[in-house]
Length: 241
Image 1 (cartoon, rainbow, N blue to C red):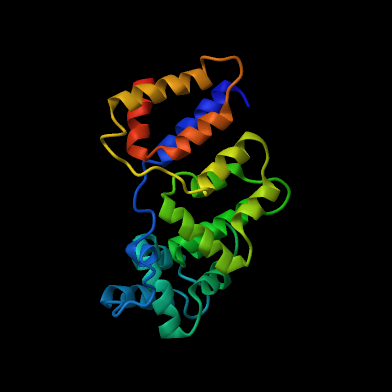
Image 2 (cartoon, rainbow, N blue to C red):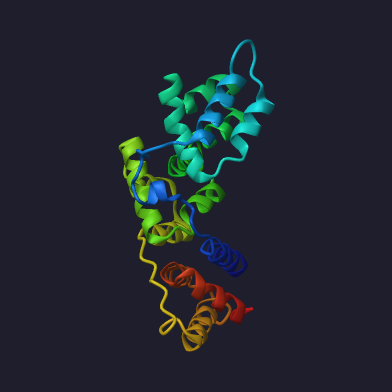
């Protein structure tokens, strides 16, 4: 892996670690049986059902109903639709819209975000070769809790260990990055520890492992990035630039 590619992947990792609240409280807290779904959720379910009635599918109506759902609403709609109509929404989308790009997108919207992530991982590992860009968007940037929930969900859906699946798919420095992420070992941000002095220390470490040496120490770079919290990495990135 070249220095430019290594640093580009590092920058991508830092950017993804700026993201927050990828999963809604329902998933984070394990509350998948809400006391009430609310009128909004029922309206979305009824719109979806109406768009699928009769001959042909009103794809525009489907997109309007599903495209604006929040992560929390997606969780509730997936549960409520089956309660109201006795059908799994994801299977309905596959039947109505097929399995190409548009149909696949609606299938992703038809389930909770953590299940979507698992589906994307499986898609990335299909066939010959592995879609590393897809894997990066799903694996990199998760908080410790999000990563643990993702690994648990993947096992529940597939009866497979996510680490073992990816071990059979990946190799080289990209595998090192992904497996550092899977460890879910990011430090808790502490402004007394992750201070200006620590920023300078990490900037120097980045330089020594990258531009400051012959050959790039990808293993060291990825380990450092995956251990540091997003807020600290943002400061390091700005200082390094």
